[in-house]
Image 1 (cartoon, one colour):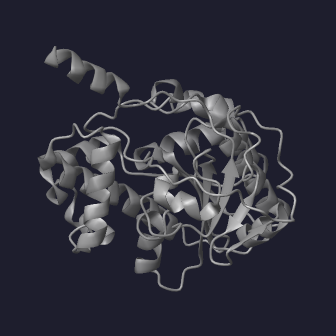
Image 2 (image 1 turned 180 degrees about the vertical axis):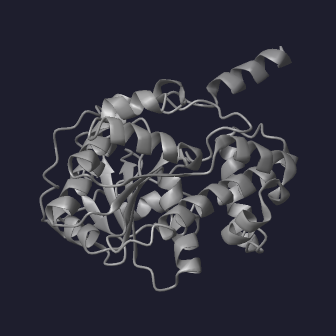
Length: 334
């Protein structure tokens, strides 16, 4: 479902290649969630397995659930159009509520201008995810079909969790790209720390990711404004979690690019609240070219996996996002 990204469109999905290596050999069985909707590479040796990055070992689902339940801010990544990712996210939401916690459930897919819409819908139709989707006009939001996200919303609403709209509004993202940080109100810009210098290594990595995600066709002068927009979205989501000030913490549903610990939402959380407990869980599709967990660092352009845990899943079919552009370019040469 991935397509060439427009100048002001999604900033999240980055891909790469890893070298072919010998399969992982481990005596432990795969994780138990094996009823996959995704059809590609179900027999991959990593499919269904959970990798503890810091521990350098595989763990079972119970270990991951315990980590999620005991952490203040839990960031659950995803490929947006992957049904298995949303099912696993819903499982972790339910594990949290079953353990007696009631964290806020925050979504990248909802922006902060929608707080009142969410509140009004839940007051009128408590626990009704479909009514909430209609109130939000989800069908015209640009996000994948609501049926994919319904399991996550239902898991939260059944437990009466607060639903949090966490993202920066698209209008403000466009203004940031066109006008720079001054497009935001001074108080918000200061709170998000958008004027703070970014380490050059990080800035370079983000520019390179954006260039690849746009198939090399994004004008060079747009790379820094787009990087600023991505940084602002990460900062806003962190800001909304910090602003909750509730003892039960929060779960954030967002793309894998936003749960990176080396930058993105976790970095903004810990920069502003150094003692915050943050857990980053990426849900990554397996690749036949990458047979060890460590191989996937290359797919996210990092020296090592920038997450706390990685839950590997089979893959969904997708088109080459740059194929049409290459064919068009080749056609103009004839």
